[in-house]
Image (cartoon, rainbow, N blue to C red; front, side, top):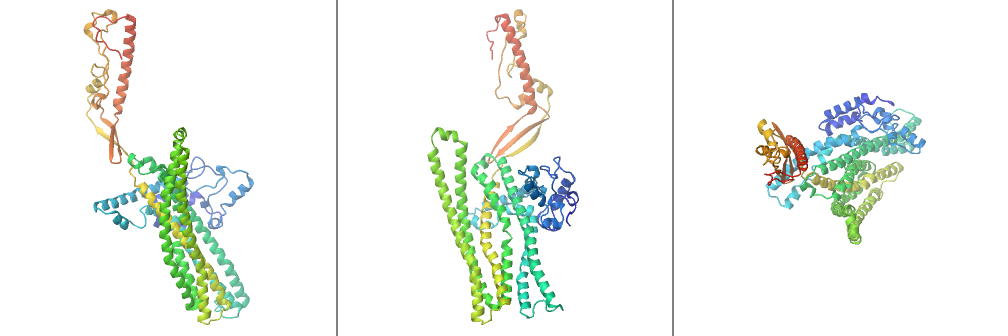
Length: 592
């Protein structure tokens, strides 16, 4: 339980039994990924750490520990102890990172799924164009979740579901302390309690209740910590994959694609947008967990308070439409703020790239004023978002208090029920627990709004056209005679012409009576020679296509012929300078 098996035996993908089960749902190519992970586990990298990275001979990875070691984070203890012993930690002192969480590995899987998703989105947009849909119709027919959501789910859904499983265990255990507290108070008061059916002594009942009140919070805390680990891991993987994919997409953009995004927008995609999607993973489970906890707590309150809990539940229902309204307002303000952020970052990058021109023309003050103006508008939008969040949080924070006030008012004032400890304290505990889903649900909705806006911005960037480089094979007939003659030195092809008829008349000139040097600025492919296979590279950029052919054999033959021509020309110059003058019949001689 403590040591576990080695990384070679367990694989290096840092997956437990639960993670493997959920990975079969979350990842479409689980078997292939698992096989690759096993191969990486069996063949460590030259640096000494399996899967790549810097060597770490001091620590064992998380996958090399057992269940207890993982739950209690025993694999972190040596690293913390080393931090106390050394003044400065080196890169080799860090804990080994599982290859399943490396951005280089995840980005490759993510881009494979991303390509399929973007093809489907392009087909959907093409259908809208064929239907001549108006912008209003396009907005109505746009799906709520961007197409970019599904590649993320297929790649990292297993990690998210694993965290969701432990979150579910945490929520189910969280219902029990209030029930145990109620039974313990009834046991103290000498009333029938939940363990009365067992034939035990009074001391044994007390020991069991005390044990349960200690054990249940501990189990809940352990499940919660494991849930946070997987939530953080999924957020880090998503952020790394998105940032890497944006960088690789930037390298592949065509000329038309580069016009669709500025440098500031690219930086925001890699930093802000990817960060917002990754931060959502800590609160994504609150969407269903908040509803489960609210319903469960209200059911227990109904058990203790009767239909008086309905009054508090009514207040909770009234607060739900407010959440939807605040969600829309925050999403709209966040979109406007991101446009201003892109504009500000663009101005700053242009100032840094053209700082020499900026200083020479003394444009510092105008640019500073423009940047400050955009920044001021951005801050105003941010202040509006903060104010809306503050109003939303204030309303939701007072919600549990209003619910308790209404419930106890109806219970004691209308129903005339006695306020006994075995009812008051469990009810107060449940109202206290009810604050968590009520408080964090609006924050979760706000983060969801930010993440959806970020995903749409990233999806728009991923749909930009790329420069598709293709290598084609063009077969041609081989004519060795033509190939030899095409590169030869001729009067019309660019080279030297030797006149044999004048050799007898001009012996002093070493048999050279006339020299004619010419150039062909744009030789045809045929004049450069042929090979059985000529490689031609076609670069298609956006809507316009530029076709550039590069015959490698022609370049080689032209280079060799040019060398021979230069050698002959040097010999001719030496001969002419040695003879002193050019003999008769050289009036048409031209020199380069």
